[in-house]
Length: 382
Ligand SMILES: Nc1nc2c(c(=O)[nH]1)N[C@H]1C(S)=C(S)[C@@H](COP(=O)(O)O)O[C@H]1N2
Ligand SMILES: [Mo]
Image (cartoon, rainbow, N blue to C red; front, side, top):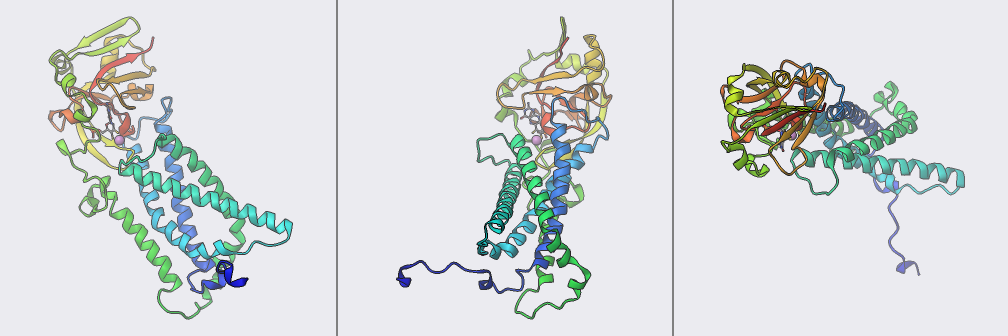
């Protein structure tokens, strides 16, 4: 009969490599935990920045550029660390469950929490990486889902750390460091941790050029080169947004409304108003960012033209007719900031069609996705 049964399942002793060791798991886990919490904390800020009722201040102007840059870098750093860690611990997958009911229940709960942690962590890194490359092979909305699963991952991580604390303590204790490694061929434990660390740093350095100018030349793994018309990448072209005809129409007028009061301004009217130059970054959620010198009309001057009081948020609508980013809600602290512009020019040249001609919103400390291009109207609800 025995010969008909399937071959026996492997057991932990079938994985004799000295690299499958709590010390390796604990070291990799510590680095992974740090990167994960950094990504989580910066992700919370980024999420808040995109809420229509965000209370984040409009300064420092580079705030979102830094938090989102760190968010994407920390997530990128997690990828090699997570792969190495999963490899180190995977023999534990074959642990035989205990027979006693109480132990079995505890064991089951611990395994289930690890299952949730691994699934959530892999989901976060996979969706994050896909978003960075603007590849959306799913039908759910990225940001709310990435945000919700982040809480699942962090919750499971906290449980995991609490459960494993005794093992981690013992593995990282100074006495354990003095213990010699068992002899073996190939990579040492320290070598594996170092290799994962180097891979993680390399992943960050080779992608961060999308947002750190002096790393641009080595950004061979960055999905964006960091350049485009007028020195700034384009996320959605005028053609893709379907606005080429309306944006170049000589009959174009910007509508500014506050209650019953409204004004209608051509691009020449806007050019005839006092112009201001603001040096502000475009910082995309996908991790790239670039600085520009934007010239145009202060948003506050336009709101004053219709008598809109300070302290009000503004609805900014684009000529674009479809897509999630054609209307944005600008909270009052941005609307009233003296640096916020309806830009007509970039680096001294008229705004190119792909950067939002005839005019685009540019505000300090704002996610790029909310810097509406091809603006058609500004409305302050009465
Ligand atoms: N109307 C409109 N505005 C938009 C977008 C869009 O799709 N439609 N994309 C946004 C995104 S995601 C970014 S990162 C910035 C990029 O601006 P740029 O293309 O001028 O660099 O524009 C934003 N403004
Ligand atoms: Mo973006």
